[in-house]
Image (tube, rainbow, N blue to C red; front, top):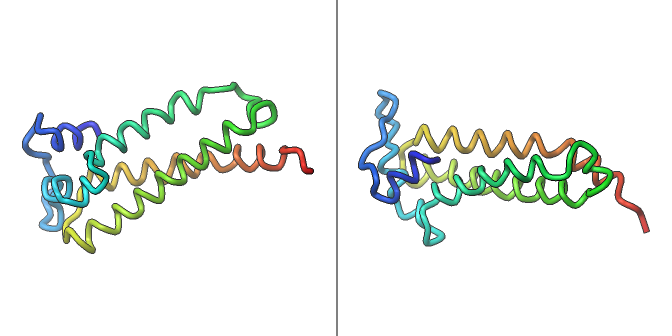
Length: 131
């Protein structure tokens, strides 16, 4: 997502693509869809992925028991990002008619982070006091 952000902010002018006609990362990343929230989606994705590092490190190994809100928040955050990545993934062939290898890698990263949060979030959920 760092390379995508560099393209979207004008620092670089071109992203190399696999040698297939169905790929055009420049088109996908400079489309209106990529700026739907008023800021380049690459920058938002990069920031979201970077925030996962301190969130994953926060609270230590017993946080599901001691601070259940942390793994639950991590799962919600990463779930929303995975949903957004899925929406963008759909937009590539449906609207832009092209693929972006960088976006595919970013989507896979978001889906993976979400999947990795689920076991701990489930443990935290089960450990919440019932009223």
